[in-house]
Length: 141
Ligand code: CMP
Image (cartoon, rainbow, N blue to C red; front, side):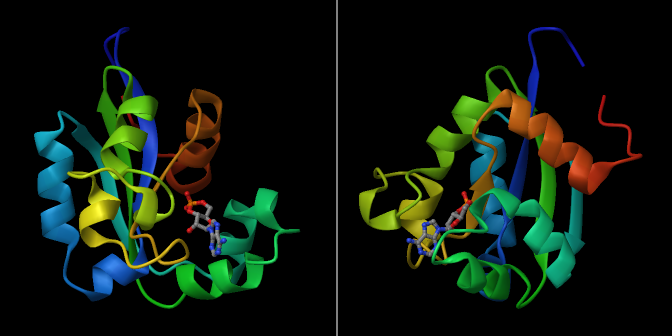
């Protein structure tokens, strides 16, 4: 990876996959300047989802979140561009689609704060942790 590039971890969540929106979301992603460095369709196990969202374990919505993330397949991705973590969060829009800006993925595709169609790492540090969680052993350079 070139030194000015950054990688982030992204998920197209089960709501969007079920609605056949993978292609549309990938089109927005590529148009926003991201290179897709890794991509895998998978259905998370309960154990994987609980581990991934471990920081939210004490939140009232944790059970609902794990149910949702395991209800069907999702798309796991490594995205790369300059300033990828911040730019992907900008491209996704606010966590709650009701607060998401026009033109963002969540404004266009998300149903609610719980079923919000995409995930993105919130820091470079967490991007590295999350990429390692799902793409351990893959070459992402
Ligand atoms: P994500 O960015 O994947 O990481 C944490 C997730 O928790 C978040 O997206 C939302 O989908 C979910 N979440 C946050 N707040 C709520 C809430 N109030 N109710 C249900 N789910 C929530």
